[in-house]
Image (cartoon, rainbow, N blue to C red; front, side, top):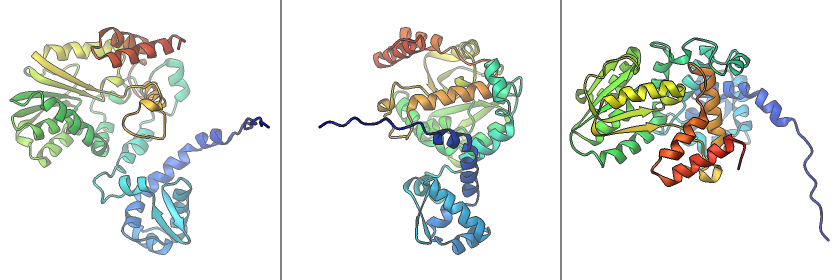
Length: 349
């Protein structure tokens, strides 16, 4: 005898979870600020011991730890707290994979920027309303925070990119690192190739961070800087490699085309440009990095939303971008993916 499975009734839980999402980010930000996860990793597992270590009241510590248990960043057995795998790997300051510093940029600075204060206005306009220039205004201090807070997230991609391109350019090369930020991408080239010379372009205050990182990596003598906007500065020569990492998504298509034309004129014959960006994939099964507990298209869609809110001007014309990729890419898989995305944008499948 077969049974008919009843559909689950509508449930508003997810709506309230989203509306109250700010509470979770604030709680996690506080836990990171207290070095809560590091304290527990060091063996402080009960409320009294944790409170003493992080310098907080026992009541506040208990409430915060219980919140982390509910959010699945901590485990609890009796009165003892422990780290779950993600927290042990990514939120313990003693681990090289620590990414807790990203909270400074993702939570503190983005809230302080005011970019999200008038979300409705940004949707109506189709672009940033909190500032004429958005977050890409001249010498915006938010990018100093980005350079210092987000570097750990970029270390592995920088190494992978450098390893791939250095194997193809093993001799003396000049590398132009646009919107260098923390400088890790250019620095990775210099570390792998002792004959590589790096020129980093960014706002003056941001380049101080890149210079510090280059010195710490032992490549300071082969790392120079050009302060200013990539749309305006003299690149002072021609280059074998041009790096555009997490940069183009801030701008609309005409603006991207303008800077790419400028960079093309700074490239020697046979030079290569590396563009690193977030790319929407077809489904969660397309994610080759691993289970991120979110479908990659959703992640990319949220990035597009953030770009609209934070960046100067209107959002990019995705149909134009996918059409260009579909017609020009030499990689058949990428071309097919672009064709599929183009169909989806036009309402087909």
